[in-house]
Image (cartoon, rainbow, N blue to C red; front, side, top):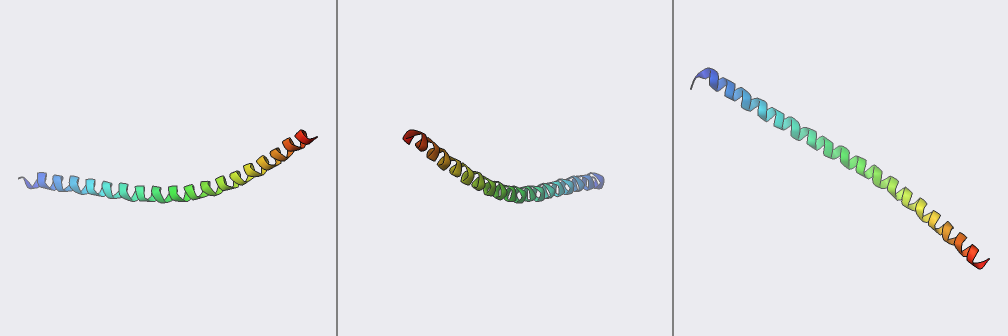
Length: 69
């Protein structure tokens, strides 16, 4: 095999491995960011659930008031 072609093949393989490594690193970073975002969304949804529960109780009390009036 010609040494120039062998050098080109080695360079292409090296570049491919480097790109795969960069992609893996980026995916790990995206996973970590997604986990943090997911935690924040779950916390906010818990707040929304609490708020909805309070409104439900108030609405039930109001409807009961109309029924007994």
